[in-house]
Length: 472
Image (cartoon, rainbow, N blue to C red; front, side):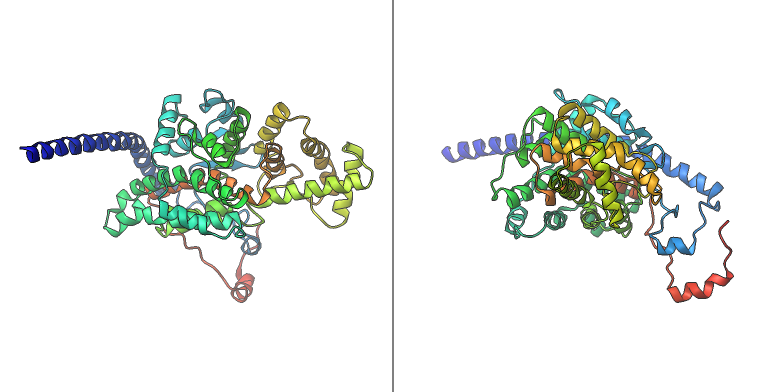
């Protein structure tokens, strides 16, 4: 009898625990299914629309590809499709048709916040629609539920040499997470290609959920002797990332939200976006695709640019004071001309596509004017902003004399105590993942093929050139 009672009690306990687990999993799965249900008809409708569009206009010419384009990074070669954002030379970036000021106005904010929540941007890029406060709240909860990183992975991350660049550690950590890929497993199990987007979607949410955790882990390992801080699931995705790094307060939380929102996407031709798309086109899972994209972001000509701007600003300030000069238009004009006459560039000015001040720069400037207008480094950035476009226009060597996003971000991070320049690109990567991974879901949903452009040798082009027409 005692044994029977014990067995009955154990059975009841098992049933209760199992029921709780099922309810929890069901809740997680239900929200995931709600988003999927919302996405599925959009993907089908868009795919049908594109199919008809291609049938009618597929043979129309987008651009003339010249020999120069083949040697100069394919600039001006219009041959990619990215649904999540579009960069206009005059207007700047538009996320699903919305400008940065519009996103700041329309996307939901945290209760004590003044800047948009990055989760809202994720929702917008995935669905094309501005989410409600409730939808963003549910998405935040979903990401928290998916955020756990297994202990073995954390041990390997913790074992990485502290001298290894944070971006190298970030790429390694993303690759370590790949063993959890639902897409890779489903593909091995023979899932139908019409289901690729669903498994990609699951990986994308899992990965975005975990990125702040591994990024904060790397920061604390390298710069704070491995003294890790607990997460706070009462906070939103961006604020929680800030707290795990060791930064607290409404203003710094808003800085993280702004930074993580505006760096998410910049259409499909930049290195990190194109690399993620290219690797994903081979049906590599989102983990491997993002790891490749982040390796591209680590390059000095892409994601490391904000570090170079910051170092130049510090050198400029030191040189200014060493010569007995002060931060004013007259003295900085002299310094800028000296820089240019030495054959150097002014870092943070100019852009491959934009022909006006980068809106991402503008919103960071507005944040600084509101919260840190007396900061010395910001005063330097501010005067440079006022005088440099005129100087570069007078010099006549650049098509775009205006500042880009990198001209300002380092100044903000420094003010709030994030002084470790080598880490900045990791923060950029956490943000950029939102855009490139949302785009990857649409790539799979639209059935985009493997990318395989034709290449030539210089010898082959030299033989071909006499037979080709000249661009008008």
